[in-house]
Length: 296
Image (tube, rainbow, N blue to C red; front, side, top):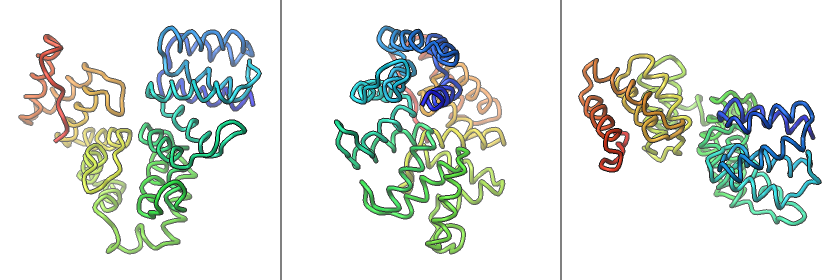
């Protein structure tokens, strides 16, 4: 159990940029100083509103590390961490509802909704489980195409299980990559992008960001594909990626990065990026006067 706890929290520190208090708690947990780690996580959560700290408290209650274990309290802190934007906490919370406990009844619909939040935040465990639920009609209406999309999310994020499930479902139902007539525009852009077509990557990023053509919205995947396209010289993707940074969608809000990306696209002739650059610059001077841009 202690190994599971530490492994999960190391994942948080790398993926979510945990606060200094939470990182100090992780270091103490690695040394076996669980009571001190618990105190730091609690302080980070209760006094600083740090979602990663709330996850730490939830994990310690869930796995009885440094505590007697309390699933009800774990649920409480997972909820706080999930509300604070921690995708792993949303995924863990979903798992509790998915499986149920002695005091928490199963709720497959709630589990599917929370897995979706976790998956949209980039948690591959959540994406895999959501893919499974759509493939089997558990908590949601059975939908093989949606199942494929969520397995793709997991596979793209580096999950070997997601890639395995994607291949298994694709081959079983002759949907992905075998019968072009059954492929949607998202599938075709996915294939194009993975074959090196930057326009396909740009389209994927836009579709994941906006939900175009009934695409499941995923800020995590939008940032991923917009970044690939931007680095390849697609100016519209640089602009859209800047919007994501300005709004804090799928990434931590970073005005400096947004200004840099707007500037790159503007300098190369994209007029809307010049407009967005001026807009953001004015917003920084007068933060209450202007609204944030949207991807177009």
